[in-house]
Length: 485
Image (cartoon, rainbow, N blue to C red; front, side):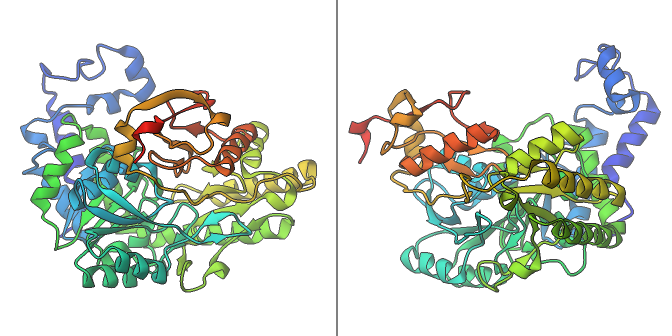
């Protein structure tokens, strides 16, 4: 196919030229009904914020320009089929889980998954079989899935229907995806890959293996992260073994019937951009990230990590575009460096956690902004460095799972218990720092003193906490004692 094409974008341009009179939704009528909207986003933008119609196709059942855009995306990503998703990669991940399993089915997955995975289990009632990942004790981050761990989980749960893999993790850690696929398929299990942070793997050179190349059955691609599309736009890729028609039905259970053409067009244009220029663009991204890593490591006290972490097992490969910097050796938590960069230097990085910051480098970055980041980190080290004493040193705590997420979420509750009094109780809700959105607690897990201490420490350091009904994260909902079984 001709990857120079962008059928949705081209159809919108044709629609604009025809100056069609709108007696349909949206009600702002090309911006005329809401001048402030037009002023903020621009006339060109609001004029193509339109509803589904025959010339523009329909995302719920595409037959023309959206269908052609899907075919182009499938070819670009080497998939059997690609779906344009407008509910973020959250909707892509949840579609994978809802497609692969149902109530009572088992699904093998690492516990350090994004909350969207466990949300899907709350909805469909499947049972998670967690593979607790190894930890890098110095960096305090969870690693990938070891082959021995996957083998053990399969042996103990031969009736599991699927395995889900994070590849790469937020921190750039990759598992031995090809071997996991081989193991899963040998036991008639599907392989689902949360590839949210791996769009560039499909277009760059010398990158970790992609889910489709490894033979995975489904993959979620967060195109808006490293691929350059608008926020909330995503691709869902599937292999030959999965029914595209059934996946479409699952998507239509939860995804909007009023898809934004701004998001759809951004996916179309961004796919075209990467198909044509991605190789060169991501080579430059790697060059910038490698330069930044080298310069930051010269400062002293910081550790910007890379391929030297690879151990051919729990860290089978590493995404060198991820500029993750360990900060504890300068006596500051990652979230403290994150806040200093934003408040004192007007630099916004992707995340700050207990021990690290992540500066997301992608196709829109230039060397001069990276120089500014390096200079700011040098200045922070010079001005704010202190003794490391009293700092937590890990991001992930292995949970004790007592009930399935669905059972716990809908169980009878004791509501709003002070968090300091919940030790030993079973949580019915999520608690997490966002980003990265990996739950500290999920429904059905036993609360421990270690977890309570971690939550209080993260709050004290200024991490953005989400999940519980109590917006101040001072109280939690727990299972009524008599309902535990």
